[in-house]
Image (cartoon, rainbow, N blue to C red; front, side, top):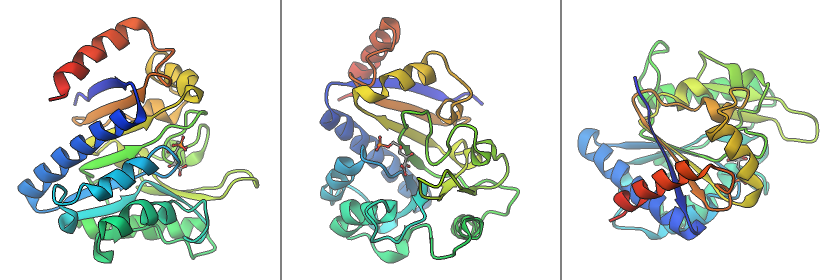
Length: 260
Ligand code: 6PG
């Protein structure tokens, strides 16, 4: 099935975040109306922090009591550690928005064996979705970032996790200078109804050209392709600086059509 794919470019990170908040609200309200709940998986990193803070202020418009918040990935550190994704999401979104603990699905990282934590997360996801292993959980929204090396989630180029085609969560053991991680895999990400990749800053310009123009399939970010779903790359002008004019021209046209 076709993926509906868009590249939208904004002048500032604030405009990007405002767009994502409108999309989050549209997707969440539609999901709750259709089936009574909204399942979203969010990434860590620096880019989404202001977005999460703004989302937590958008009360009244967002159905938090029917929202189930999952993580796209996590570093294997205590939640109190500055590198913890759940620590960041808790501080910037969960606590300010008052999201109840029964609606929160962090990745548990106490087990010393990362593979056991990955299997535990996969089990938690399946329990929530009530899916059997042969069915793939369908998130209503997955919010991704993209690293300068082309990784997304914790799917780094050349890793086993980036090639995982069956399991829904995987352990990622990097070099000894970086934390081990747990991540959703492409089978789950590519079954989501909506995927938004939020990318800002000039440091991302090179990689965004590799992903969006050269479509370099060695980069996990190039493999994000939710079949039958919506895929929106939300960039600021700096991150889009190396995209050819026609893409920018055509997408700005879409941008004008998309915004009220
Ligand atoms: C993580 C993220 C990761 C992130 C990218 C971009 O845990 O680090 O899930 O995939 O989204 O590395 O990070 P920035 O937003 O900080 O550039």
